[in-house]
Amino acid sequence: MLGPSAREESWQRLGKESFDLVVIGGGVVGAGTALDAATRGLRVALVESRDLASGTSSRSSKLFHGGLRYLEQLEFGLVREALRERELMLTLIAPHLVKPVSFLYPLTHRVWERPYTAAGLLMYDTMGGARSVPGQKHLTRAGALRMVPALKRDALIGGIRYYDAQSDDARHTMTVARTAAHYGAVVRNSTKVTGFLREADRISGVRIADVEDGRETEVRANAVINCTGVWTDELQSLSGSRGRFRVRASKGVHIVVPRDRIVSESGMILRTEKSVLFVIPWRNHWIVGTTDTDWNLDLAHPAATKHDIDYLLEHVNSVLATPLTHDDIEGVYAGLRPLLAGESEETSKLSREHAVARVAPGLVAIAGGKYTTYRVMAADAVDAAAPDLPGRTQPSITDKVPLIGADGYHALVNQADHLAGQHGLHPYRVRHLLDRYGSLVHEVLALADGRPELLKPLESAPDYLAVEVVYAASHEGALHLEDVLARRTRISIEYPHRGVDCAEQVAGLVGEVLGWSSETAAREVEIYNARVRAERESQTEPNDEAADARRKAAPEARSGLG
Image (cartoon, rainbow, N blue to C red; front, side):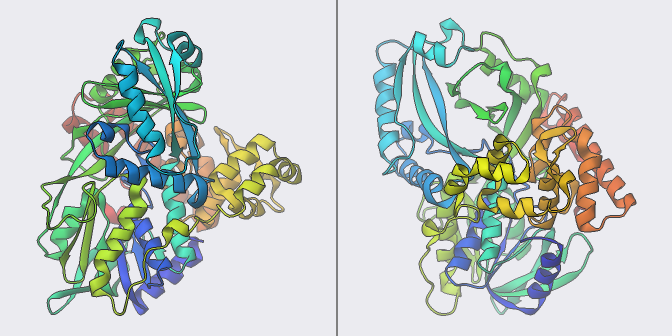
């Protein structure tokens, strides 16, 4: 549990205990590294200056996939590795959070394209070993149009359906972090690294500050692992060590539209002049993305421009019989991919997709990679820190460790009707909860004992129950309104009001758990509304510089970072 009492206890532990590893960064790679180290029997602490998954790890395409593009680039090892990870997530590690999703690949060229694509998909279907998703299915034009009636008739000559997997990335990352805490890791968000400790020529820990109240302390450790993604270079210079690789930020923008605006039984993958465009089913919505452009501005709040949104609409509308408009858009989000720039052979280990380097005695950095292979990256990072750790380091075992909520999930799905009856909920609602919490659903619903009003939907966001908001603050480490509306739930991208209409109700529920005064709750609502306003305004600007200026004008929820 990452609630208020655990937060205070973790601060005391950070200042008093000595650790084998301190992990900096609460994205999926940092959370995965903390879990990997904890399950090897190491003493580990994870610190994150903002919120868990507040950067790239809540702003991805939300797919666990091998990457069809990499096959064309002959990156067979990468695809095999990613498909193996997809299979592990679906079957063992996170079956409650990761689900199969189908895609239609529309064919547009006669004669050569079908056998060429089929050969690639045959490799895709078989490279990852055992499969828990169906194989490819070939369709005529009529068959493809029955599956996706939204397509223009002249947009394809046939199609092939194949499967990948998807997950709510922010929930998955937070669950990885909670699993690390379950195995003994100290996990703390709103905790910023302000400097590095040294003994002779080696890094021996970090100085940290609590972003919420300004307290400072020192954390002693045998090694520090920098898992900060697009902030890698920044942390590198703070440590005074020369970086072995540089990280370039690439902006990816997605838009969210209602499910009824694209009539289809399947997602789609469309070729563009540079890359591919996904149309991904997401509960009652579609996610359309992504772009791929350099970003050299504010790393914390990448801004989508009107140009980015127009690009996505133009490309998806080229195949849709009824085009999407700006008015159809419910949500927009922008994230930054941490791409490696100028890595060298000697400093990059184990995979050309990500790089791991021991940049100084006691300091390891990891960067690059993709969400799907976070577990492999984490294992590589801990292995790279092994020379700085006392004794023999045990091998990684996270391929055998289910995330919390996975155990018993399948049985509960079968018992959903019974569970619904017990709590006076619709079975559909219970299945939705199971796909967010797995077997932790009992813990969530227990918070409503004697408080039946918590089992009611939020007034302006009825996909979510009030009890989920309470649980986000009491068990999942949410400290601000933004944490709940943007990451513990996805209200900020799933509703046209983007969370503004339910901000006061949610602030009231969170405030009960965190002990907010009425003034604090009002300030949280004001800051959140300013964030939404700034994002909306940035999305009307023509270029990155103007959009960045608009977005940066909004105040920080975590004032210690302002």
